[in-house]
Amino acid sequence: MSLFPADPTQNLLPFDGELYYFGPIFSSADANHWQQLLTQKIDWKNDEVIMFGKKIVTNRKVALYANQAFTYTYSKQTKHALIWTPELLELKQIVEEKSEQNFNTCLLNLYHHGKESMGWHSDNESELEDKACIASMSFGAERKFIFRHNKSKTTISLNLAHGSLLLMQGTIQQHWQHQLPAMAKVEAARINLTFRKMKV
Image 1 (tube, one colour):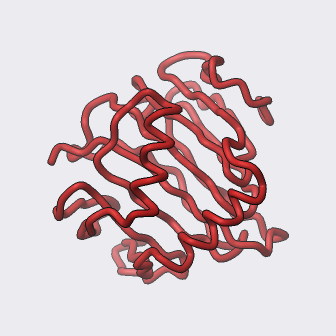
Image 2: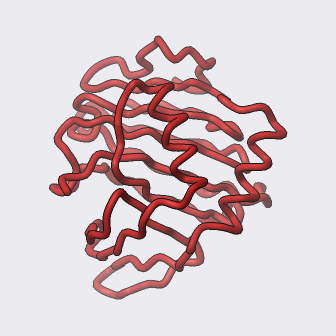
């Protein structure tokens, strides 16, 4: 199953969770503006991951912002949250109005081109509120985003457009993994914001 049209009322998962895609929620000009602001205003740092027992510094950059300073550990690495910027607070308000949810944290990723990717994983760390909504906002290059059911291996593929919004909620993190595969032909950058509810 792949390439669903945007319908925020349609659950794109056949079972075990909820997935809603709004498509672009900004005009192209506004999305360009937000991408430029985020590129310049966010305190980006190279990410670190553990692969085969070794620490690897990725070209992909990350940032963590929240209502208050705290630490968040995922992929065996600890991140320190910064306080919201005015730009992120404005985007948070937009996402909260669209999703009818509240968030206290945002994890951001900067992919410089399509060769930078994210492997299979679930956002199910103990620091996250159980079954809480995660809102994913994308700016920049359109990239494929794939979900895979843990048991049946059913897959769902989406193309995440510039300025788009995706909601993951219910039991999706318990039953599905997701990944951002490499797309070597994509030369443009992509910024992804995932608004979350943390136990802080």
